[in-house]
Image 1: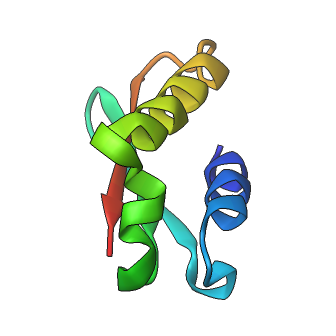
Image 2 (image 1 turned 135 degrees about the vertical axis):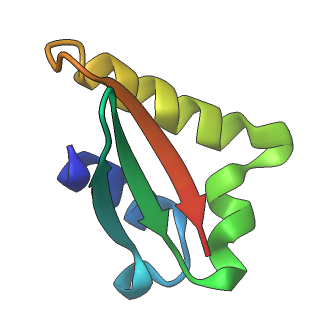
Length: 76
């Protein structure tokens, strides 16, 4: 799942070398933290959060078989 988030984010940003994804597992949630260059945060979020919402939808759909809830956090 980390690879999916990473590939999508790298296609969106100007600094693809600085994209990294870390996984934080909690009791009932798996959080994928997307770290991007500060200049690219707006590109990953998109107008009114549309890109971020679409990214979260794709990840949630891909994680249907995972018994935990899945979340994506964008961090600069």
